[in-house]
Length: 296
Length: 230
Image (tube, rainbow over all chains, first blue to last red):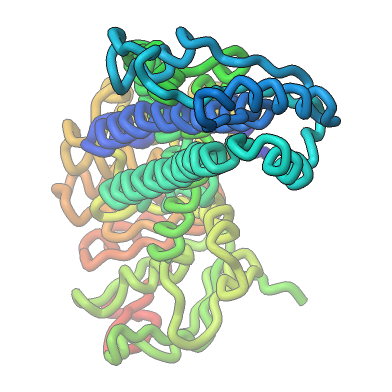
């Protein structure tokens, strides 16, 4: 903690002993910017995937569909029977029979808008809204099969589970990608710091000769690398946010239309530069300690 | 009873890669004394100097500086010990992108000392070593003699008790050698313990006319007091 406070407070004398130039400066800034840019994308994807999984789970979990495939003369009778059974079943909130137009709209993506629905033998679809807990599905199916043999109760589980699993999997992969990005950032900064320390062996010799302790030498490198990483990551985040904003939105496009940040989620990209700076601080300190121990 | 020596070496040996540089070296530098360390090239003068400020550890034996056993000290303790020892190398060792003044102030800045007070005293110090006009120059812009005097200014800025000078006149002409010797003698008169490694016997003879100095000769793997031949 005292090291972090010293970092914030700054020590220009310690910092000035290390030359400002060198490839490690460019390497650190460029790496931090690139990693922050990627981190913003992955964060947006992870948050969107999580949000989408929750949406899909919630929206499909509260609804069910009853499909009635019966000969034309029996279809309306069975539909009436089904609606009566549903109205008597605990856990069923509301029911609504889909109109021909609504069914045509559902088929439109596959058959186009000029489909003559009236010429097709389509099943009757009843949209069911569930109340908390839902019905006893096994009991309901048994009753439907006894009283309306053409009716099939579909609780969407067959569709819902893989979609939610896919969204959750995407979120998990995104989080793994974030960990990898953080690791690569830390390793790159540590390597750059290590290279800088090696390149400044003469400076370290002089500092030791005049009585500098390890923490002074370490501080000379740590603050500079931390600030470079902070600056690079801030630039990367800005470009990342611009790129995320430029992703085209697709109406009803599911996950593709939802990639981005909403409300309190904006705190996450804002934290990226600071997380990168903390990583750089820890990585540089560790690299400095290792190099100083090796030097003896 | 406390050891009265500023630096004491007891039965010290130094070996590199199986080759023994010197062995069974024992010597004591009393506070305020002036010693020359001489001997042929490769005898181990620089190594012996490094032992005295903890840059090198002995293969055998024990070294105490200000009554502290250097083998018992960690790297940071050695660093703090060096603030009480001013070291002047033949190659001076500066940080080239800093000005001469910033280099001279380094011991103060690394020890978190009062830099402003030291900066205020800089003019006197730089005047003492004759570098007043060069404080804002970079070390590579200085001549050999100027670098040695800047190194001496850096070595004394914390007013250390011991001055270790390793071939401080190795790269300068005779006139500059005498100037540097004069500065070391002045420091000794102020009570500093001085150990100066040199192969320049003329300089030692010159010094002995002005200061009570003992001469240690390092050769044949051991150290002995040089006598009347000087």
